[in-house]
Length: 87
Image 1 (spheres, rainbow, N blue to C red):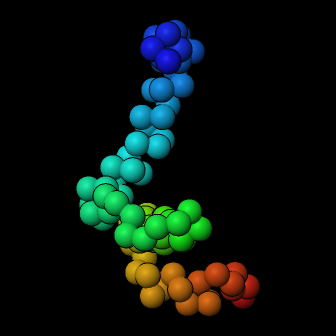
Image 2: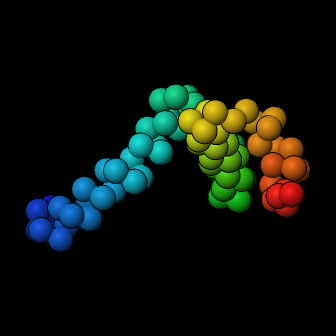
């Protein structure tokens, strides 16, 4: 593994991982405080991780809407998703 990571291709792949994947796990562990699974069995753990993933993604959506200056209530109204014809 050390040989793979020290190659040019390995360094490129790992550098992409640092930007794409690691911030997600950092947010889940540090900001959401999720450090261990509370239940056992693979199927149940998958469900628990799915819930944590949903929470993470909702947070990303809320941050995106804040940048747009749109509230969550405005974004959830049906008229927001249906284009209104002009004139």
